[in-house]
Length: 418
Image: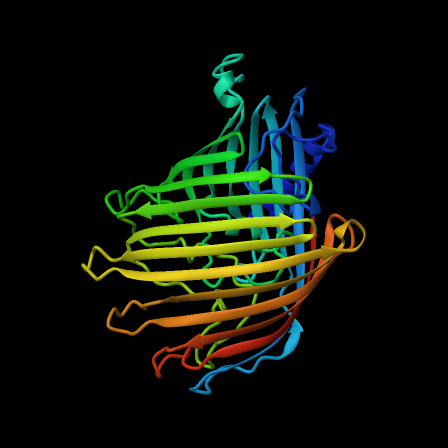
């Protein structure tokens, strides 16, 4: 029954899309392909509205993984070199009225869930003319409102991560060790003026929605301030600071909210445990309180790009009055694009995260990753990348599977996005 519903929705959407000339542009829409590589927050454009339009999009990714791993306990499964399960996304975007657009995204197949399920969606408002012509037009000229169960806009790193099969904007294969990504019900207000960005919003702090724990959660507050400027023909600079704060959550999902799974399959998995779909990433295990700060820089000079991240996360568990703990993350990557229309690139990334585990008596542990690779855009919507990765786990307890753990090797990924 579930598959029938999904199939019906899919074909209805395609039919409506063709009837409404999907080739026409949507308003304030970020393209999905090579054109989106350096686009971050929603941007205003001047596309006129004439009638309802629906756009169907998708992303498909296929990986070949050749990794090996080890630890001090010598109790890890044997890894071979072979293909991972192909992953797929589907997106539906509809221009409902002038300045009013809706988005829905589905995961068709992923590392964790093999069945189809909904990632989330949002309503984006760039004009209020659907209420009254010209309503707050001076304000809305620079403002955007997003409402839904959607990807929280905390930090800039989530714009460059692989979201299941949507891996076009990630020059590498892996996401960050502390992977800040979550879809929660909330709203965000953007205001962009003279190269400055201001964003304020809130969410209900829940990944899974229910009404049975009314006192278990307080809203999470999200904010971002930034500067983004094409200084001259050769140089672009973007600097942002973001925060996420809640003092009462049923569970902290910011670092465990991606349920599609890691891009490195089955690494550091023991012989007596089920597959960990978050393998290669690390969840600090904050329970009910979290204050997180992320600083990002993006600098593009001619064909050379640098993207940097500093993140500080502090949290605890108010239910048990446990001592708060702090984790820090630093990451930086350099990408050089070359060839006709910048069809090729070389890149290198370093990522380290360190902090205390849930047992506050434990000493600080750290995880370090180096990733380097080569990419090729066959067209604006088809790409491939080959990377080498080496990740070390340091100072974990001798009884932990992470004690002396390491994984390294190559991964090849082919991606289609449209």
